[in-house]
Image (cartoon, rainbow, N blue to C red; front, side, top):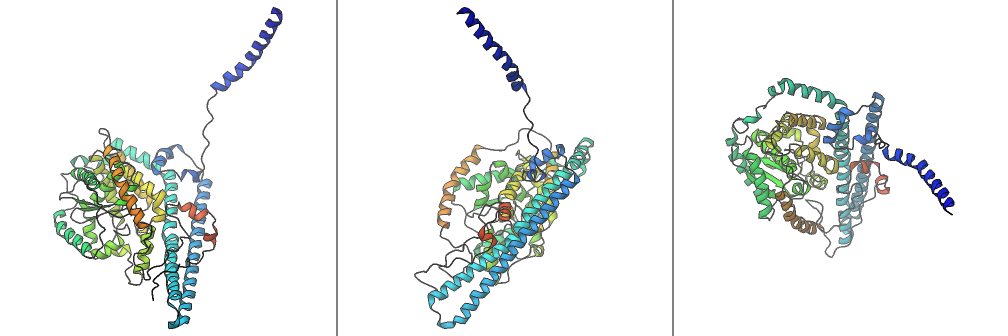
Length: 500
């Protein structure tokens, strides 16, 4: 029995010994390398990641050419699809108007009301298709091309930037005297803007163009405290007036004379205090350089506000006004001849580049993480901005140029102390804001999507082309029946009091 036990034990040990080397070798083997992403997959990454990755990547000219061609084909195909949708909606409107005309005055109230609603909804849907084809889709592909340029060009730009830092030549750039912030003059005459800003605010209020303030002292006080901290560490030489507006638009704008407005939607989208600070610093930079005052010499405040405050235009915050507001404005103001071109307002790419540079400096001076503005801009561009983007985006500097110049300025900033990214106060503001947002969303459920409705009591149209927050690549690539063949606007439901 003992002999049998020894043989079995020896056999078992022998088997174990034969297996252990394999197990040991398996445990000690290095992990498999992460799979290499395709060039297109890299374009989905945030700008900050690409700044870090670009020097380590290498793509062949054929790979780059293939990606460029694919982007061009994708943009053309997607834009043409929605141009065709716009034409189809126009034909449907023409048929509905013809039916209305043929029916004449004898048409009953309810059928007339339904035709009015149908035409109204088709106008809105056509405008939506126009915005997608002429603005949102080009913006999305501009973003992808900018990231492709960054992957190709940033390694050399980074080398030049590092060389400029090492030899001190970066100190020769404009506004390099960052240690003198607050004692330098960016543009003379800031005090001259105070009266102009007061008059602009009064005009907006009289015209009913300024949304009401958020009814939360805690939220107002918090945003004001962040803005005042940045203003204290900026070149602003006049008092700052800060208001948080009750608007779901992701926007902020500065009027002359230190009047700064932050809309509720921007607070909802910001992920940390550094992102909010980056946007506020950018807006304050517009005032220190007197950009808004210069623009107002070329147009009335009312016209600027239509295109700027309501459609996220004059002063950059990421360009993310809701597409709903844009085509609502198109719908409402086309007939009044008030659709404006930002080129007529004098929006300058130089203004935005100046505000980018000064904004980084002010965020740095106030102790914030200087990447906050890039991170917020990138989030909006990727998640919301190019679908919800509007026409002014096309008049501003290319994204590649803006992101590269901002990143260069960040690298030029002295490294001093710990930079603030997140704070308990920001998180508390989010909690204070949540019930305000919930209440507003509840009130908005049954509101019409048009700012100026010609026919009351209409059911809103089906949004066939786009769902809020939907990435533009899904809009362009997902084959949905209602995308391939746009359907007429939803037939309105009968109302208790049809309009004549």
